[in-house]
Length: 456
Image 1 (cartoon, one colour):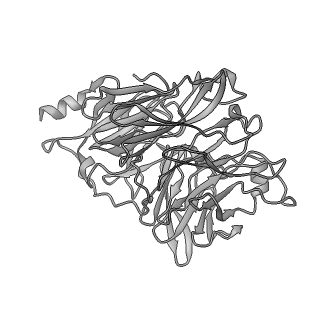
Image 2 (cartoon, one colour):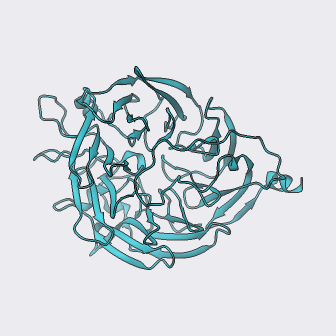
Image 3 (cartoon, one colour):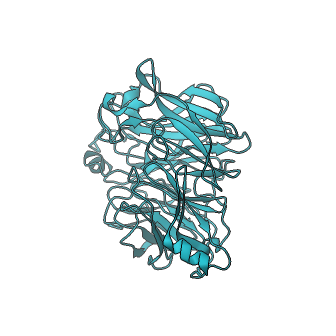
């Protein structure tokens, strides 16, 4: 059992699993045994009681999923920590082999109130820069502005893009249900922004409730927002998923309004510039990362995963299926769509129908956006304070044959090893032993089904 709650997605690199906790501790765990290879407590976390609002407790530490640069053998996290008795956000780089701290860099925007900020998105790499988003605590209390932050891996003064940057404006969080910004093949950065403080279209647009494309130097290149952006701001119906980039240049976006928008990635079109939309695609808001396979996008809906089919000529969106289970941000591996439900169950769904093909109880997660990942021959699922790892079965194990998985349609342009990337060849997870759970950092569970399979 780890020392704090897990809000991050597990990462795999060079045979180890990396996670970080709300107690500001980073762990490297053996992918073969679950033993702790090293752990580093980078700082003292912030007591939740000292913040103006929020839903993470009892402490707020590392919330955003780390990123690993294998060329540097370094893992990067942003820690919410106490400095001189006050909250501060610090980018920390650690050696992946030893856990030694190699970088500390304060990343709080000048003039901001650190207690009002939450670093919720995952981290990613764009060249030699670490990229991530910042927003407010749950409840949108106090005064904050959404930011995209870029910091050189070697340290130095951070660069910022600010949402709701005008005098008197505020909010516009970059949070995306915990997903990391997307870096495209040109090195440009894609994010969505949350609700801002402008509630009338008689006032200048504030970059909120939007999809934003930024250059690697954080210059705004283009944006999209629905015509209802003022009303969405007023009623907290903002964009809350990371933009999904398709290989043909189309972009899919959704959020708390439950509406899915299809955009032309080469021309987002500004306000009202969508190519098509699909109303009420989800029974709940759409929060977090999605999975793209060809022209199908699997969306995170807390009430159950949704599959949307995208057409190019004419541009259109169609609902393929809506599952009644799962709902956390999905990944696609070995022919199944994997998602974690709020009931503490990991589901493997048929990508064509949404039917449940595999499932296992893993334990309740600490937050609403738990995301599985694959790597090193493992399927990994985070729970509140540990990671559950599923291994592929032996060739003698009797299993249901599954179709091979397709390659993701859009790969980020960076060197990072990030959650959900690689590690299991197509079809390999058709041999997963549901019930054979290795709790990384905790106990090995050998449940009855594992025992029966082993005796065949």
